[in-house]
Amino acid sequence: MKRRFRARNPLVPEGGGPYSRRWDTPPQRGAFIWKDTMSDLQAPAVRPANPRFSSGPCAKVPGFSLDLLADAPLGRSHRAAVGKAKLKQAIDLTRSILGVPAGYRIAIVPASDTGAVEMAMWSLLGARPVEMLAWESFGEGWVTDAVKQLKLEATVRRAPYGGIVDFGSVDFGRDVVFTWNGTTSGVRLPDGNAIPAGRAGLTICDATSAAFAMDLPWDKLDVTTFSWQKVLGGEGAHGMLILSPRAVERLETHTPAWPLPKLFRLTRGGKITEGLFEGETINTPSMLAVEDYLVALRWAQSIGGLPALISRASANAATVDEFVAARPWIENLAVDPATASTTSVCLRFTDPRIPDGAAFARAVAKRLEKAGAAFDLGAHRDAPPGLRIWCGSTVEQSDVAALMPWIDWAFHTEIAGLAKAA
Ligand SMILES: Cc1ncc(COP(=O)(O)O)c(C=O)c1O
Image (tube, rainbow, N blue to C red):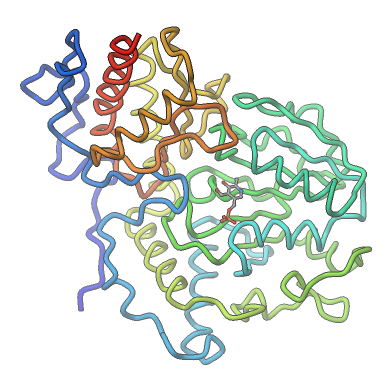
């Protein structure tokens, strides 16, 4: 069986040639035409080849097929040599593609990114005062964990949707928990410059919608988590937990004041459980999901590794930016362009003719889905109404480009419908 990806320049759409901006083109090339009535609105001629723009689970790697999973050791023990080798390979490839330093440990843990973050919080917090930083709903979820569940006296710093916490005001002498890319607001930390390398506290970073699409400064991060279902388009189920030597030191010197379920235990007899970082998982993983992650990692390698993955996401987000910049009725939710996400790009409609923003955005997303142009484009239920377009590395730029005229079409069709109803 063939199991290989064609190596190609990720920035050049299949069929070659530099990308032509379809939404600027005349009607004979499939562009949207605005006329006066709803029935006159003409849908674009071309749909995205892959209309999957969900922010998780995200689009599978280009060329994905279930045949690629044929080497999964199904029906075998994950502790048999074949299973352990696969798990170890997943850890090793993660390290090499992400450039994780040699002294850092990487484990595959249960319960996706949530499992990895909570395992870290429950195992490490309580030794020092903690700062919880939140600028959208996932960060807010970690605030709830710290304040209501662990009952820590936390300093909570929040920014509204579209903004970001001022990292300059954070005390890194404390432990600090934050999300690198706020998936529901499309606001990310532009870099780690505000985090001091010589801090006394630990930084615990939920990087699930950033890892593989954004540069992560390992010297600034003591705990980094992500799941397979995001930027590499893997399956839900398992989380990745990356620990700096300082995080390991904390694990070995700090005993939490609360009970730890078996699923969260990273130490035994006061010592780190080294096997965990060699692929000896706490409980049974899905070897099908492991195989799928390996397929995604090999694809990532084949296109040029991290720089290529980052370029793909950036080019996708730039395609949306260009579209947004040319239209007065839509804008990026991120207030500061330097913080605008290159994976979960969040947009809001600003047209004053829209009476009910939530209903309008829902209708646009539904129309796009019904037309087969884009699935799962609605903003997260906790976020301001709008669209969220996943631009992560598995998404093809040609598909993002093909989607843009469809947004024009859906927007104008809905606006025309409002006028008709009035
Ligand atoms: C920033 C962030 N944190 C945590 C999660 C939860 O991830 P999972 O469902 O993989 O546990 C998500 C999911 O979208 C997320 O975007």
